[in-house]
Length: 346
Image 1 (cartoon, one colour):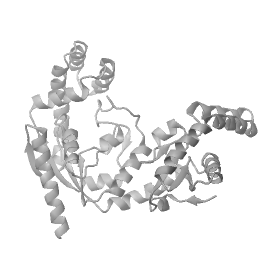
Image 2 (cartoon, rainbow, N blue to C red; image 1 turned 90 degrees about the horizontal axis):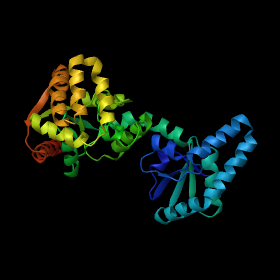
Image 3 (tube, one colour; image 1 turned 30 degrees about the vertical axis):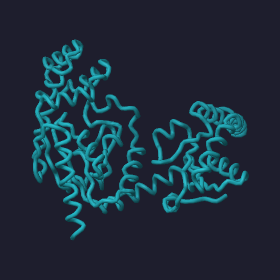
Image 4 (cartoon, rainbow, N blue to C red; image 1 turned 30 degrees about the horizontal axis):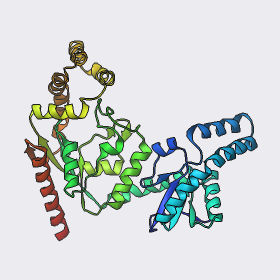
């Protein structure tokens, strides 16, 4: 059976990586740009594993074959469609074992140009963890700072639309970086998926500078890779600000439709850092659905004082006080392209 390493896979053209693991495995440990065609569904894999432990390897295999057989028509249809778009198909599973081996052998016997990812996801992860610091050395960082609700993410999204190389770490981490950061996120956090998305961004980025939002070492339950965090710390730093009214507007856009119960859980995480009086007041405002007033108080009484503790850690190139997102994004984008041009002329 023909195998390919992930390093060699990256050198191929017109090739697609097909992940045959379960949807749950794929969600938490996705290789960017790969496609999930599971040979076993989540509950089916659990059943096979349980049978293996409680009965026998042979019985587990028999059950596994029965599950896969039922799915073969759909699997064939999906693979057939991909074969029309790509000249080579690479199958992968957790360690390059039975799941990817069996499906690769099947489609090879049918005449498709297929390969198996050698070592599976484990080998992929070993590769990117070793390679990520090397890729990161190519870049310089422009780091955008600002107090809670100032709209850093919205500004960076607009800069991305303007052609700036923006690495959105909070989006990659599925967390907005505070006690309220998990609210409204669609996906569970995953360090492995996070590392993979950062590596893919660095591998494909064509500029010398990368723009990021200022982050602590940890985003929710995830950690920014040490090499990236060190480069961010040593990068160029810019501070942005706007009125409290504008900041509350932005918080309402981000969190205004979140369920009261979810917001309550987040407020309770703040409880040990504030007085009981403030906590009761926050909860009263929440239950009364006075969210704008709650947001403003959280900014003034909790987040801004907390931010002041860390604000002097960096020397800022300059500051921008803005009224409109577009205005700020345009100024920062102009500065980014100036840096790129200067760097290219050195």
